[in-house]
Length: 195
Image (cartoon, rainbow, N blue to C red; front, side, top):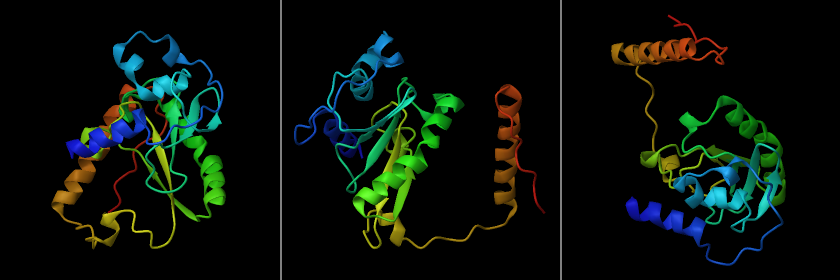
């Protein structure tokens, strides 16, 4: 697993073929940060215009680029222009700005690649496969029978509606309730238990 993480990270830092730089990228909060982590972050370097990338889309909040080690043709990344190392540390307004671009960008990618489907993916944390610790969303174009994920061939087990599952649901609702009380920006309430 560690070798895979290193290989993916290296592919982002040193792509196999030189990529032409597609113009100046706007200055963002990444440009003014003093942190060593931010200064070393490959996505922050792309945002500051210090590293090449094939830019597909850009606005004040985010940037979309082609992944330098794609899982499929057109595999792209939506990256916030401010540095946040995980989804949990990314403000809801930034996540909303990134997610609001998904229909627009994914439709363009699907038309350009001839795909009719895509996966939307966030690897959040090392155990989930995150290798660049700057929040980002993957848009991965798909075609029927492309066998991209080994897990697609696994048989899925139905959810057991037992005491353990009920306790899990209660624990998640409790956490959602605590989180909504702690955050004034949280306007939605957890779903009530359905018997």
